[in-house]
Structures are given as structure tokens and as C-alpha cells.
Length: 373
Ligand SMILES: C[S@@+](CC[C@H](N)C(=O)[O-])C[C@H]1O[C@@H](n2cnc3c(N)ncnc32)[C@H](O)[C@@H]1O
Image (tube, rainbow, N blue to C red; front, side):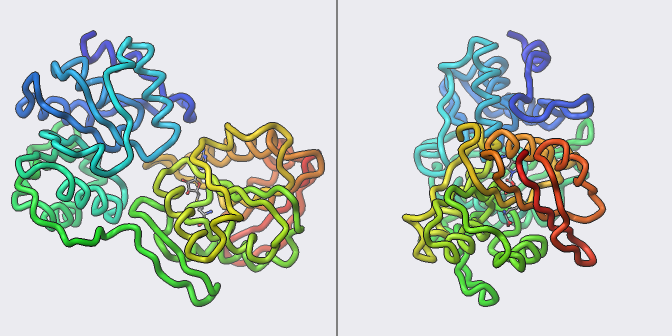
């Protein structure tokens, strides 16, 4: 199938779909066009950060590549790739791997959609330099408005040559060559202590807030003594797992699940649970909005929802979490949510969960308790 015809078939599902949100962008196109100068039929191609499969499937359909190894942080992106591949008849032509030797060993060409954070880019660049061969070429593409010189600087730590290419349709590719020797210890995950909570936090590069305590989470934690001791508890969108760890520590009889759509978050939350001796009490699940949990199976959900979807501000991500909470909570189960007060989620919480009462408000944040009706 020709590339543009393939792109036209791509869907973002199970992610939120909306008119202003697309399953591919100009960066996918410019990355694939640039890649054409570097690949031959036997090239071992790796893709990192593919959103919905445009890069993986585009390389298979348009570059004459036989097989692609791919790493995606988001659970929903992994499902979207599988779904889009099945629709295009390309389902057996790629392998999904975690960041590491299985993904990168022997790679000739690595294509990445530049991530938002420099820490995530550093973890990726280190892995490429650590596991791929000395002649591996890395093509890193992004929207010009989201790119910074800091990204070049991160790549220059790991590659002797980093060459920005001409921008096209507001996207640009950085070509990185000559991977440099890396230090014996990988830079991620980092584990830092949080003296104000008396715990240690483990963080991979892509995780929300790094090893620091988010100020919304800090506010929700001030309500910990009022949040009920429940049997089956979920830290939804767990990030580094601070809420799960703090709750588990206070409520020894509870079974706690920490779940997130981001692999970096899930790996970090496991690390945080282990670092605080809660590894056997907290189950960590990589999932999209609790899709693998049974309906009515949970008594309490703790949530600091996202309000950014990629680079755009979109309430859909939080509403999807509320809808998921509505499905998964048992009757009279509780959802405790903290959010930026200007977001005014109360009506949605009342409609989707049930009776909702404000538990507190500071100059920035509101904490709500919703009871499943
Ligand atoms: C504002 S952060 C909160 C992280 C953590 N609970 C904390 O308090 O530091 C929101 C988290 O929700 C996760 N998330 C967003 N959409 C999700 C979805 N559909 N399913 C699961 N997790 C999701 C993000 O990856 C992110 O880690």
C-alpha cells in the first residue's frame, strides 16, 4: 500500500479521537523521507516513540524494510499500532520490545519521534548508544515549535555528530551519528528520597514529574487521613506510584493496584514500591484507563488526572479516566480526585460517578470525593 493511502487508514483508537487530533503528522512524513536515504533492503530498522503506527507501518509499506522493531511508551499506542497493522495486513512484520538490547541490538537505523522531556530523550539516547552498533544512525524528528537546542545538547552527549536538517512543513529531523561510549551505569531510573513524605521515589525519564512530588499530588496527600481504608484500591494514572505507596503504607490491609498507560510510569511505580518495601502489596499494571479490570471490582480510586493530551490541552483524557472509574467502581465505591480548580470537573464527576462533594480547595487545586451511585 502506498504511504499516503496507508496514513489515511490510521486510527488513534483506543485513544481519544477528535477532529483536531490526528493519528500521524508531518514529522512522521519527514522522518520516513529522510530514512529513505539511509536504508537498504537488509537494514535493521528500529522505531521509538511511534504514536499510532505511522512510522512502523510507513517504514514497512514505503521503505522496502522487511521487519521493524518498535518501542512505544504508551499502552494505547501499542494497541493502536496492532490495530492499524491488522487493518493494513502488516501484523506479522514488527516486534514490540521494551527499551533495551532486544530492541536495539544490531540496529542500523533508529527513527524516533522526539519526546516532550529532555529526560526521556536522554534515556532513549543512552539506550541507543549503549545497545546499538557503532555505525547506527539515529534520526530524531519533531515539530519545530516543540524542539529546543537542549535536545541537540542531549544527543551530543551520546553522539559525536548531530546535524539538524532543513525544516519542512514545520517539522525537522536531527541526524545523529557515531555513538559514543557510555558510562557503565545507565542514567535511568533515578531513585531519590522525598524527605517530606519519608519515602524514596524511582523515576524513568518519561514519567510525569520525574522523582519530584507534584503539587496537586501533595495537596491530595493532605487528605490521606480522611480517605477511607478500603479493601480494593487503585492509584489510577499512578506515575511514579507515590499515591499508591503512601496509601499502602497507611492502610496495611488494603490491596493496592497502581496502573498507568505509560511504560515509564509503570516501571517507575514498581521501583518506588520496591524501594519502600511495598513490592508485595502493590500490583502494578500497564493498561489504558483500567481496561483490564472487572466492572464493579474496586472500592476506592485515587486520581490526579492528566489534562494534556500530547501537545494539546484537551479535557478528553480526564473524562476518559472518570468514565473508566464509573465502570470499575463497585456501588458506593469512592473516587478521590485532585485537579486544577479552573478545570471545573464537578459536573462531569456528578454525571459520570455520582454525588460529589468538595473536600478542600487551596489557591490552585480542588479535591473532590465522588460516590458511585
Ligand atoms: C498528572 S499525572 C499523575 C501521576 C501520579 N499519580 C502523581 O500523582 O504523581 C497523570 C498520569 O495519568 C496517566 N494517564 C493518562 N491517561 C491515562 C490512561 N488513559 N490510562 C492510564 N493512565 C493514564 C499519565 O501517564 C500520568 O502518569
